[in-house]
Amino acid sequence: MADSKISALTAKTAPVITDELVINDAGVNKKVAVGDLTEKGTFTPTLYGLTTAGTQTYTNQTGKYSRIGNIVYITVFIVMSAKDAATSGDLRLGGMPYPASDYSSMSISYLSNLTLTSSYFANGFIQTGSDYVRLFESNGTTRNVLQDTALTANTSLILSGCYQA
Image 1 (cartoon, rainbow, N blue to C red):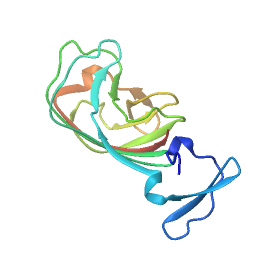
Image 2 (cartoon, rainbow, N blue to C red; image 1 turned 180 degrees about the vertical axis):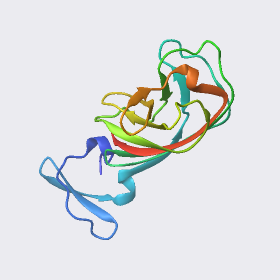
Image 3 (cartoon, rainbow, N blue to C red; image 1 turned 120 degrees about the vertical axis):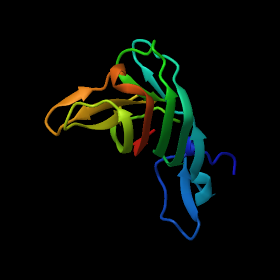
């Protein structure tokens, strides 16, 4: 088979038959192993400011992803050991493996040493065309974009979610 990459596939597919799909590519049926439609890898997530990015120091900076078709599942684990004083502006989590083709929310399941307003929780979303997660705090009624001042020298977080690439 000439090209079985995800980006080369058309929208017409047949149901899974054991471990193969039949892809109709310009009127020609092609068998593709299901394993060829998935991709797994790692990426390096970074916390940065929008106005001045800064260069944080990390003791753990892990990003893992799985892509199935155009859906990308990510997990991020970050532990900082120092914050760059030059960091300023809206706080973002960059380095996602693919730009998003639509908006999608992200869940922060663990958070430590990130300064939030009392009774607020942290969350994030990725927006169309971006390869970063916008971080914000919310109390269920009000949402505020997190600023660089929320970041501390020992910030830790685990974030996960999925989005369309």
